[in-house]
Length: 193
Image (tube, rainbow, N blue to C red; front, side, top):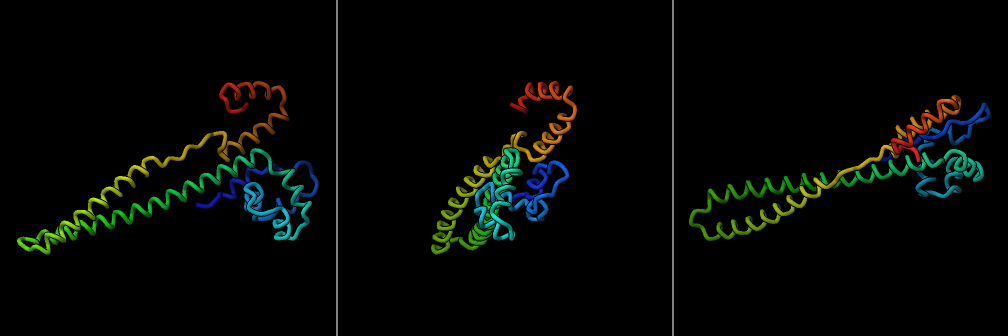
């Protein structure tokens, strides 16, 4: 799973006023650019060069649009992508172990049917038994790893919640009489500091 750049794009604050919008904000890859800035995958100079802009344009964009909420969304998306990758790797290993176990069981069944009184077959059965024990131990370990792989999300880190919170706070700025009551309720719920 890769980082959800659409969630990052939605978390970006809306431009204030009727002035000219930053070029970076209008780019289709703005989510990737924000990820590069927050996770410091590229320097601002590299981003400016890649986008055909001046360094100062990228720096102004960073200062104006990469808020703490946006940084939090990027970090959550990065963590989710890493956890999804780990789960994918573990699932691939589990499929390999399952296939190996099936193969060993089929071999054991065939050898048991043919092994009556044959010394070589008995030696093969002993070897397969050891392989089977090793694979069962690996399968047990794989099961424990799969059970312990959990992803915990904090509502305060959810991109959708952060977007909703930003919208609500923006609306409440226009209605100051409701703002104090709302903020008190949010503090009681420990959603806002």
